Length: 131
Length: 299
Image (cartoon, rainbow over all chains, first blue to last red; front, side, top):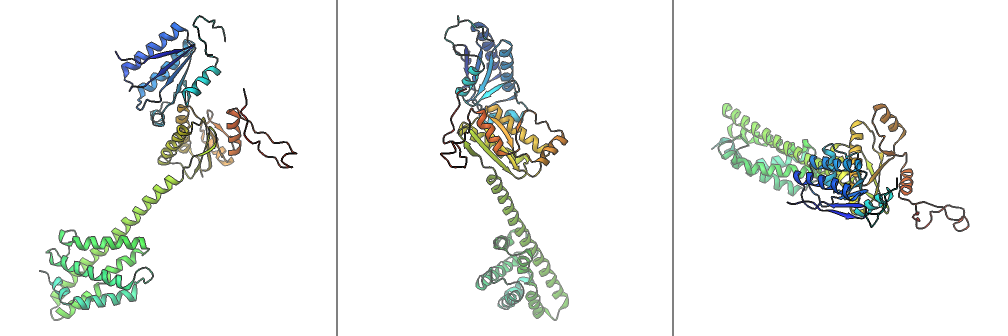
């Protein structure tokens, strides 16, 4: 089955959405992200949607859900690289994604995550005792 | 075969010369059109009217027999609309054909009043319709002009300016309606992507009034920019507008606003970790000067 890869970069999860999202894929992604955060103890989730051209209210809600779920699990979510057309569509759909943080590029998103205390670490067996 | 067509055919030369003479006394605009050009147009119109009158439907100008006359008239009305003729002048071009035409009918049928009346009535009906046609074509041309100007205005009025690395400014001039908001939003978001700017200053000094609708449009733009990872600052809020916003109960709590664009720019520089310092007085005389490259502060 097709699924979206969830990459691990130290304490961060990196997700690049490069295919057209359909509902099943989105639900699968929610499952994967939450279980990976729990498994690896990630403190940051970076979702790159720069190649996402089409968006509907379901995908919008899915992004908001992933952010909310990650927060519950103690990880900060940042959505990066949203296309202008996608942003306009979401606004027209009335979805301003209030709980989701955004950044222009992957680079800017990483900076934000490091700033938020989700520091880059190499080993999963490091102590995680920062506030 | 109609009587009108016959009359025109037999008296063509005389009708034309009287028509041109009449027109040169009333509405000939030698500043806009040359006499030879006018004669040429009269000639063509008279010929196509004759052809139309012979077509079997002497007064119904919508039939195919009249299409050459119709096209010709629409062509000259739209060209005259662009040249700056008034609608009256354009319609008079056709209407002034009446007198010479009636005179010719009288010469031909002066002895039979019933027939004369019939021909005169046909000619009146016909020329009135043709004159209305020119007016309609005139208005259509003008409306086309207005639509094109509106479009040009739309394109002209939304420049996105890069103030600094990562800081954009969008001065909005004129009232924001839905169509303009769309253009403004697209322009801004496109520039945010292409210049990789994190901060955008929307200056509303040139927006005459801010009502709930305009505020809603602004908020939409700001939300879309935020979704992409850029932050917006609204500047140029005049005191009256600040009062209006509060009186209308518009919620701008989540939006950063500043009174002047300079304040917003300073804030954007500060938020991006930059600082502006005045050079030592000895180096730049008594006047304060911006320090060359703005140093990026290490946080």
